[in-house]
Length: 153
Image (cartoon, rainbow, N blue to C red; front, side, top):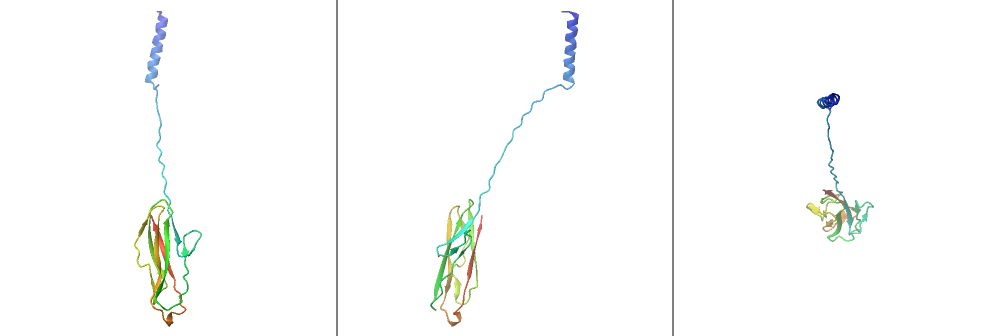
């Protein structure tokens, strides 16, 4: 081998060693990702009545107009309503009543406990008014009772 070739090889070798020391290098990288999807269920209650009440279009209220009382004898005017769970989350229903009743009239519902309602299920409340014997002072009176159902998830 000639001196020229040896000198060229030595120069090339020195240059390669110098470049490696000067920061010539290779870097490898890769990227991955993780994704979590989550959905929140739906929640809703609707009301209906077996007592021929007028149900609002959104099924959020029902009104029952009881027939007039035509006797002074003790009696009652029952009113039942059903609360249905229309969502995908279990619910618990609780009922409160507000009334303008007094005198011989009383609420049939009493004090209902909280009722769990499974998805797609319903619960029925038996409510309404009862009264003892009516007197002359009761003539012409009008009574109202409003039941409010609170559904919670």
